[in-house]
Length: 543
Ligand code: VG1
Ligand code: CO
Image 1 (tube, rainbow, N blue to C red):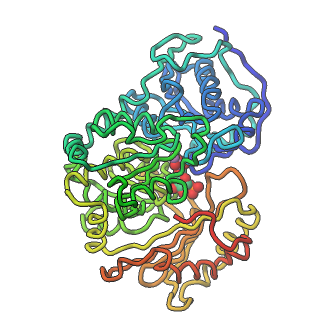
Image 2 (image 1 turned 60 degrees about the vertical axis):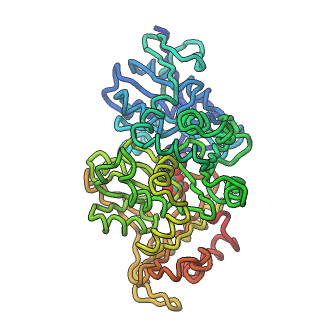
């Protein structure tokens, strides 16, 4: 067989972040850069001889090139089979499903998620393990260690593969199967949700629009919404995955999905709108007159879970990332089920899901999902909302305000300061860390600090420890501010400030979010010297 061993020199900057290795395309295009990282993944794994590897990505620029390399390298390293999405396409949740359904050894997902795509924009490589979820830190640490010393990689010296035709063929002794990227995922969704009631809701004139933002969810959303649920053609906008996402920034939030938001809010616009990110694991949900904050979406999905056939027996527990609001905690308390608080990043939910401790998980960053796969899942959340709307026969706004009336409202916002000087950002966190012991008992106006720490997670299943996961300052009465640095950016540092205030009184649930949080936002700046240290007057993005 034509297996070639190629000598290479290591790069020192291939440390996986919150969700895989993310860099600008010109960085990835350096000689052997992608090959080094892929070989380092394989070198960190054991026992995959003859096993199956799933490969797919979000269709962004450089996706096809790296998929060609990955398939040829898998063949050279001894995998028995590669399953790859047609056209190189697999959304992140769909890839997770394929790994689980076909009992693959693992998968390589090519994506930089919500970051822009194109020749000078972002690319990413992530490894997922056999449960379908992102590799835990133990594995990503091993991969990073390997990248620093790697001196050769193996690749099958064969012509490029035709990624566009579904079918199987042999490549240097390994089977390659090009699969329909959508069908298995759409079938899974039909198993979980009540498609006949959703179809009836749509047939009754309830207008649903999904904006795929030129990224991976287009074909999935069309199959589900237009083909299987009967929504009119055109209900899915920007439905063709493009290498540069058609110039869209596929981050489904009020800044980048503003067009959709404005449309739903207009009198003649649709009743319900949703948007997804580049790789399809995030979601934004907006109903007429009501944007649903991701943390509230998690709580509301959990509170109403039993309306969906896949969750009719009830949920075992809820998990949320630490910065996510405590709205879900109140639901867990009422249901008498477990509540777990993990560091940011979906990889921390894997053990809880595998152990059956948590059924539904969520992050404030527009991520929601469940034990049906091991990734967050944007279209799953959208279908869950449609299932709830069909079952309750109320509007999004009614459902959200009733939820607040029952549980209280957690006013919540995240302020991002993007592309800040790295030394300044690290300095801000270091200074906060030093201040921690002195904060409890201090008062800032009416706000008194109850406790403050640098969040550390002890995984209850495998006992692993993850330290330095974000600075938390908790105030008496349940308000809090959290500071952490992003682990997904590709230039400079991004400081994230998460602000939350609990309001039990329904008479005070109608405030505008930023004004409801104004005093906390001011205190966050005072404690962290954010403006002074970042040199910024205002956040780059507010969600
Ligand atoms: C961000 C979010 C985090 C999410 C991660 C990956 O990480 O805050 O909640 O899991 O992106 O999402 P960070 O480190 O930049 O804050 V995605 O849609 O990239 O897969
Ligand atoms: Co994503």
